[in-house]
Image (cartoon, rainbow, N blue to C red):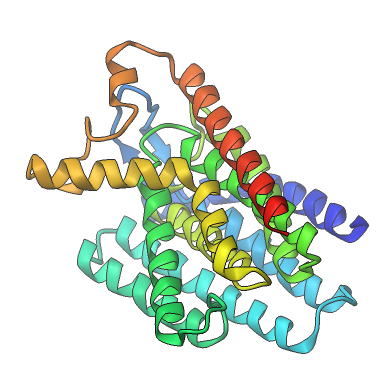
Length: 308
């Protein structure tokens, strides 16, 4: 446990140190948002938010492999594959931000990254291997894009990803899963530090590069929780932790089909659209969303303990 607390502390520090460099690099690459919305402060804001998360993840995964005596060789290998997947999905997101990749090619990139991870062992533990691989791919690709859909409000995607990572970490701790606990500690620390710059009014946006990276990490943790003991039931624990982003994503998808509206123009499709109409302030809405997500996480932990 002291080692994980150290990882959490270092994650906060590294992310906070790297954020100013991410702003400079974003300006050099021309990654500047020219949009502004009801709950966003997106006018002339850099959006290379994935870089601090990727840097922190890289440093601390390598440090964790070198320093943690509880990680076995096979887990160290999977951690390096996860780091590769994180880098690839960051690059895919960056190319999407630069308008090099179309939405369909971006989705194909996510699928290829998910295939690499699943074939390397990031997979649900179920008797039916075909079902296990299918569900794992669905979770990884779905979570990667679900976090992206939550980033229409300053601080929402970052906060929800951090809260989800925290509760996955609690379950990893109960399971005695140092492998998963290391990942959750890194993500919780990096999102805590980044939220200071991403909270309304944002100084740095996640961009697709950051959204896809955090989404992939959340998806990986969801699969790892369902890959341990009691996996036939803990599969649903992951659903409960991610209840809010999953529900909102399904709402957006359903409304976009009914209204024949592109997901790229999804304003008014979210669950929180009614709150916008009621003129709820951004920070009040964030507190409400965080509270619901925390309640879902507590419920998930309770369900997990009840199953044990």
